[in-house]
Image 1 (tube, rainbow, N blue to C red):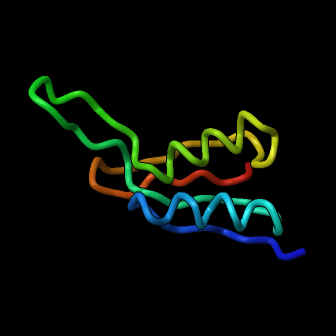
Image 2: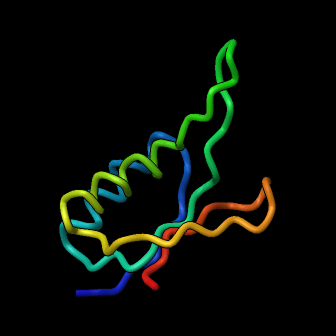
Length: 80
């Protein structure tokens, strides 16, 4: 079993994260921070962030530490 740090943001990357998590140990996820969408400019997490949150809720991925130094920098989900 490999230790994997996954990097991705688009919708097509979320199923890849889930498939990798079934066979390997995902120790971190790197994705963009939530983006504002819609008329009310609500923050919406990326599909990979949503998939990572599901893995955390299922106990597959360890609890996360979110770090974002700048607004444009990616959000990192890394084992503390």
